[in-house]
Amino acid sequence: MQIEYFGANCVVVSSKKTRIVIDDNLSELGLKSITKPDDIALFTSVEHVQSKASFVVDTPGEYEVKDISIKGIGAQLHIDESGNNSIIYLITIGNTRVCVVGNIISSLTEAQQEAIGVVDALIVPVGGSGFTLDPIGAKKVIHTIAPKVFIPVHYADKAIKYQVPQIDLSVVIKEMSIENTEEIETYKIKSREAIDEHQKTIILKRK
Image (tube, rainbow, N blue to C red; front, side):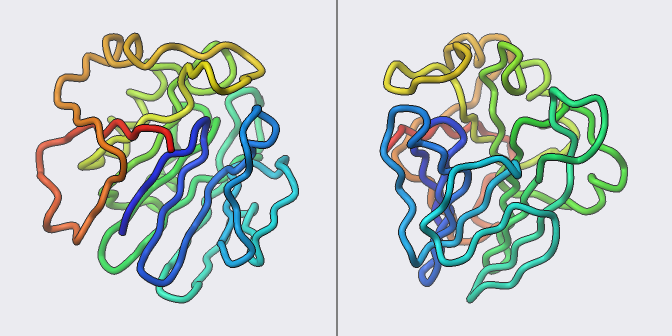
């Protein structure tokens, strides 16, 4: 499995056979869409751009596609007072489990926690400013899910035309008191056993 970052909430999780593109709303943010017809497209909100992918998921449920298992779990958007208009995704390739959250509230229910289960890598937006989770909210989600690896997304980037200015990643790292970090182009996971047990923050360079 490998994970790549393309800006905003957009990440790609891929296996040898399959490529999953998550939250490719890049065309609305001044960047080019990266989705191809053979991709699987996941969206953490029902409101999203039209996708070129042949298989699109934007609702809770369980899906098996080629060598990948996908579980979508309903969650409350951070701007809503109730309802589950966002989706948390749990992606399983082999025995490795990646969880992706969108613009959700920071409190997860017991049912959501049980549905998520054990997580190896957790991808969380951190830019705040009322648009998505801020560092405090992101830290709460990380503490609840307790992944081995945390990957921050959706922070300030001069190339991206955010609707609301986002917090700089350096500020996020300071406010979250993060010490163990590694900056790389692509995060590759051979197996869950190969991941260090000590929690690490992986900063992915935008492609």
